[in-house]
Image (tube, rainbow, N blue to C red):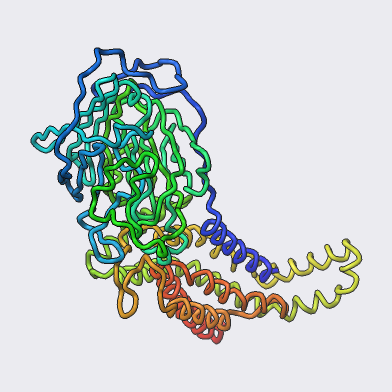
Length: 556
């Protein structure tokens, strides 16, 4: 019985890990709801206004004369933790580079995805995305104006925000531009090669509406998905980075779409719908030979539709650093996907950062954190080991009871109940709790899951070297040495553990290390390092428990 309960607990843990790593559920975007009241110092809609099916056109004003720019040169902007480029052709952000992070080639990390509509472009193709804007420069801000002289006009303003990774943006439009919305982001430039991202590098749209975070993967965007309600932020995210708009004026809604794009290595494609010719002015616009082109990838695009033709707010374009995200409020820290036991992950992250401040190596910090957790859990683990040893000692007596009722118990439920009563009486007589070995393990499952998600999503481990061949604790081990060592340690741990149950059950347990080893081949090396070190501490604890029990026997 003990062995079956233990087997059930272990298999349950494996199913949970496999499910969340392979088939993590994605909540669909919220359905239609009333638009939120305006926030900020300049309301643009009355609180309590009824929902409207489409963006409210800008109030009629006299037709503005045509306004077209003359200078096509890109303009540099810079803020805390980022620097970027604004292209007057389309009035869009063609580059957002994070100063503190590098891509897999060692170059500064670029967030703007090439070959697709850029941030601040309008949500549908048109001359407003293709023609030059008139530029006005101020102290720390940039203004852009365009008008076709036929009632269609756009005004944009971009400046460095007050916080890290922040830009303050405002887009106003009249005529058709008033109702088409503004692109917040279309995909993100990859910071890691796809084969190094493992199972955790997914790209998708993220919206917090009605106090809940909704996520939509790019693969599910076969048709546009509207989102309405009290929107706190909306944009695009991947494992470690995000570009989202935190609106300071009321949004009538958000539109999430799937956009086909060429591979970033092929060059920008200015003919894509809504991309505009702004992308063609970059130095990487020269296409590679057609033979090297890859099939188009579907990218998530998030378009914010403002109230009264105005989209205004803070554009957060940066890393998922928990401390930074918390500072912005609105639940932005919820974009860190720590899962159901996220409160434990947050505590472990704080402990890991504190340890790193002393040892200056994230791999060593993982080892120290693992040792600390094992020390705290030693009483529970020791109790579990003692109960399992006692259960092993009872195996001959239990087998004798089972053999006595063996044939009759299969046919008669009354006899089977009598057999179980005798087994329970034996447990009581010997002072053994049949669940004593499993309950401590079940208590540890939340801790294991919290650490699992922490090592998978904490940006602190991205491109953090450990030693020797491990150059990035966030990427899988390219040599597979750590998964092999982890599997070997689990096999040794199994052989040292008390052997209970029938031969079929023991064979099942001996397969578990190889199942885990196969799973962990694609997991981040930091997570594999934790599991390996944890196994080694478990083996040491088993040796210590054995000595403690052996020393206690003569005293009885």
